[in-house]
Amino acid sequence: MRIDKYLWCIRYFKTRGLAAEAIKKGHVSVNNVKAKASRDVFPLDKITLRRDQINYIIKVLDIPPSRVAAKIV
Image (cartoon, rainbow, N blue to C red; front, side, top):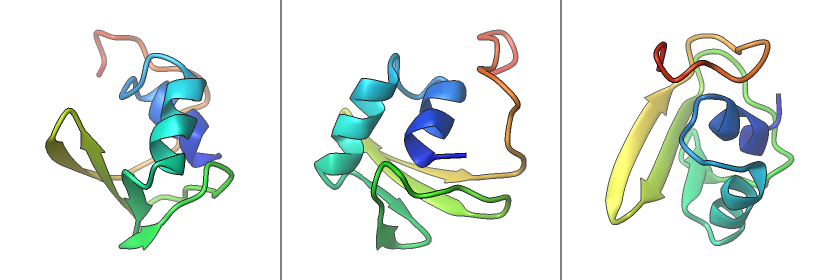
């Protein structure tokens, strides 16, 4: 799954466009390497994300089949 779609699916961004914009600005890295929006995400990848002046570290445990409900997140 593409990283922009993954960040949208787990509800870190409201739209894929916002996720792609953050990636383009260099706020997202995967395994300590700056990512492109088309980069694929695999289980056990470590995503570092800077949003609203806060650094988030996300470990990918599994790839969701579709967008996750807000209650599950």
